[in-house]
Length: 591
Figure 1 (cartoon, rainbow, N blue to C red):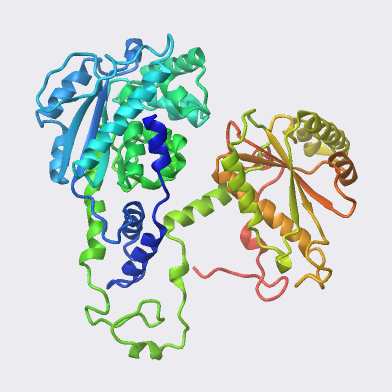
Figure 2 (figure 1 turned 90 degrees about the vertical axis):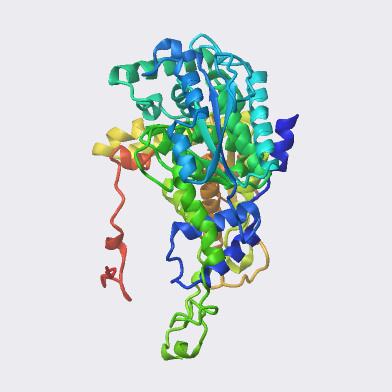
């Protein structure tokens, strides 16, 4: 099948080209990192294309159009006929995307994926699947096979564009009702309340917005789309142009061609692509963040940072066209800007920037700082995002964890630091319902006993807290510590024997952060007697069962830790926990 073969072709961004680009940027006549996100874009483009001289020209805007049966429910401020009328406007060169693309030196291709009319207009590329989708409030918008056919049509469209020389594909769309379809897709795939993702679309009133929310909820209830099968979601509440855009993203990633995402609808199509092929996310660039509330959410889910915030809500590819000059600048900076050496300019005093002359460097006694070892900002954001959005999850969806994903998470745990490199951990993966039930029963007993220790406000809160999810989670890990691993005298452990346990806890933290990055929840169950766990799981007497960790998909990650949200406790101020040189001596950051 074309879809599976394209997914198989998608590979990681070229890290070697990224490192070369970083070195090149650091040699240019500017302070390190002073061009901010423009430098990050250059590095991204190098990784996508595998070249230290990437180009985006010619850039092509692929504008896919289709109609939606759900417009019969009155979810838009405009009638469905506007789709075909706007397509005529695009081809007459009179729309905003035409003006903006001319200004940005891009070519626009208009493709009919499912317009509810037989159009014969010069310049229109017809790849029609059907005359629009069915009304998703009565059943699926399209069949599963039609969804795959539409995705594969998008793959063919992208392949044709790349074959004809396109170096960047910008996404555009037109379809009255497609914000309704996109909102439904995002609500299901992101497990997000419908109210949080629905905006005003083309300019609807508050009353129509409430109706739109109701219609989306009805469509989801009627179709019961499977949140873990993106094609099922697409077929039941999606659109033909959204499916085609998904295919474009996949083929572009397989061909190592950058994809410039436009607004909400195109971002949702990109989200579907990343669900089908996670590596395709490495080929996405976010052009802007619109006023549509779901756009901010989906950008976050995709891990892309918008280049512009101009309060747009037009679609068509307009935001992508506006962002193109920034991308073009990112390709020209490393090509055309002078280096310190070529311009005969002295480097930085601290040695961080090598210049034409090293004489001035001797003036300063400050040793060079290895700033080049820093991650690029988009990589750093991923690390900090996992840290700050990690949560102790107590409620799980009964859906299996993909073996490839589980292996990555466990491998991250296995790469934790350990004293003397003794690697004292083992992981017992409990998947048996019978064993999970026994673990649940022993935990429930200890939970009941622990509840007697609390008084006042906490005694009232305690019964309301769900403190285990062993029965729901597909996997519960027992993470153990073997103090005899390696040799009797472990490097670094002679004076602090418990550092082997510390090592295991580092592995658990690695596991937790990796799971969060993979979209999985983790719950650390701490109510059990170790001897009971040893007996149930057949653990030798000298092995310490450090933690029971439930892991699986969850419906939501809370903004704050649960115990903070319910008033159990609050996060202390960092400044109150810092001392300078000795206990009790305040430390103050210099501002």
